[in-house]
Length: 130
Image (cartoon, rainbow, N blue to C red; front, side):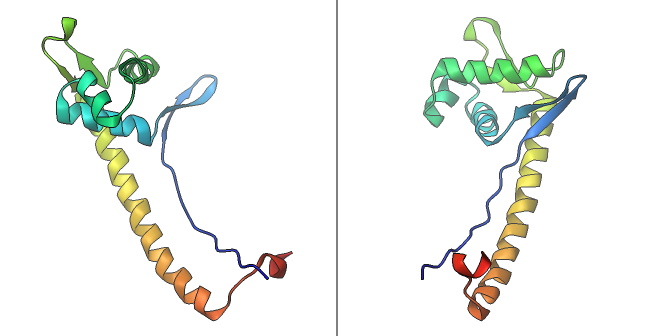
């Protein structure tokens, strides 16, 4: 009889409400890109740091900015001379995302302690639950 152990995971993403419904704005990959842009001051350097294609990084940023237009999350100077930075809105979104991530992570860590106790009391197999 094989045992099945279930693990809990989660993903967080932000969505925007539109007339047509909600559309995804950004999740972990775009958050990491925003953090790398804040760190490096450059989309090119950020894309290299994350190992993603520069064109894809630009598309990700354009996608975010387009969805929240006329607001922007990231601004770049023309010609790549002055660098790239997060706007105040971009910083706030990043902060809110990380705050939510920390809350979920803490809850997950606390629930793992509870599951360990439950696993010691009873091992559940697939056959037991069918």
